[in-house]
Length: 73
Image (cartoon, rainbow, N blue to C red; front, side):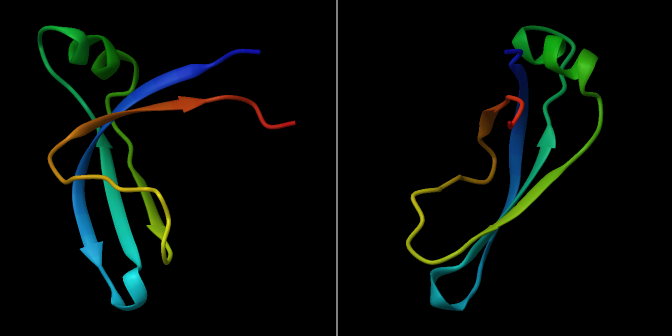
């Protein structure tokens, strides 16, 4: 099984009623360090998702996160 790892920065956290939250992410990019490796292979893109209710998912705007993608069978 192949796992593809990307690194994204949370750029926005939007709060809605009933404890719903929307998170927006963009790929990280830099000229040096680990982020330069991720930026080379994912120079553009975006992720956005809505988390409903009492979900465990919590992300902070301005922080970076790894996203691991594995095939779903």
